Image 1 (tube, rainbow, N blue to C red):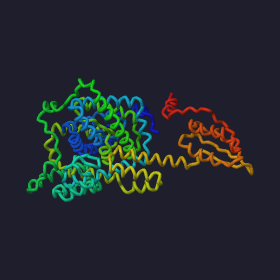
Image 2: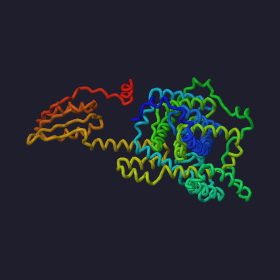
Image 3: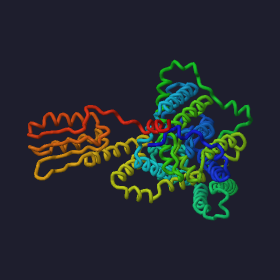
Image 4: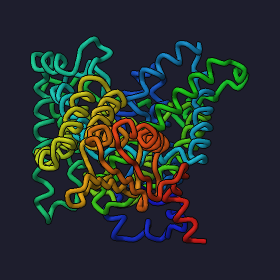
Length: 534
């Protein structure tokens, strides 16, 4: 169980400005900025929203959400998992301002979910499923970024679904890209990958972050291939809106249509966004905590409130719904991010790039940014992870592999749901086979059987207890001892009392020791901690 959310209060703000942390956070923020930029644009394009909406969502996810969040490494922004919902919602609600109202209301619902401690749901995601989700995201990054690295950019950047909007799927898109690759894009992506892998090993020169060097190479490559008569196509480049001045910048914002507060369809969309965004956020938080080198634990309820504030802010200025995003967050971890300042800085870089250097940003080829994501994917799906999960046993390895396959061939939430079902199957199977909750002893030649229950006897143990009781031979004295039991599930109690009542038909005498007719549920860990701290 994760620590209670209030334990994260009283944070020392000074640590965010320590030189040792800023030395890691500043370079990492540049990497996250470079990764987030095409993702924000691609997801906005796929959602049927203005490109500016994607950028403003990334800015709010960086500056606003990270400032409020208790997570040190999570990075928020527009999420690929919401594109279908957003596209459908904009169409069904009729216009973009009405959709923005739904985003604001979704944020309010997330605030409420955080206040009622709904974030504790995140504590119940099995480790095998989270590990499988991370490995799947790594494979998706590799598979989805290969076409972009080859210079074939028919699908939007950031797509995570198996079936694409261009009527291709993950594998057919790669096949098509191989047959129509661009020499310039391939050269840039291969050189970029080489720099990302080998530059950090040159300790004296590695002060300059490898991803920044990759972008400089990409811009230089763009100029070089243009000069040689083989220019990269516009669809192979980053393309952010060019703002002529501050007044034009202000004109890009859109406000929600509050006159639609009586429209019931707005509330349906708001609930859908709140639920899906909250689940994606909780999954992302669990995953990022797994790969945090310092192994910090993020307060999930506070994260839901931070996401709620972020979505309210995003909806108010014309942005898309946002979540904590695994791709950006894992890029942050792999780049060496130490605190939330990395995410905050990345939001600042997004804002500054839009205001001051859009022409320079538009010279960056997508192939060099694809290289950054390819290396990130490689680190997430390393072979050692598969070996580690295999050595944990089949009950861990099978849900891990099933989650990977399910996420690859569907999407994040559906894949995790399938992994959860398989994990629950193994949990039930283990509880049915595991005899830890009873002990049978024979006293000499007498047919005496003592069944000693453990501290916690849940409904998961019911089937196994029934099997044991059903197979006790005739003419046996049975003692069911509950002296160690702090809690016995009502279904198990009913099974025990029914057995005692009917056992005489087999000549079995049943004695119950220290078994009450009713047990109250033990206090939650958080409540116990609060009692201790009083």
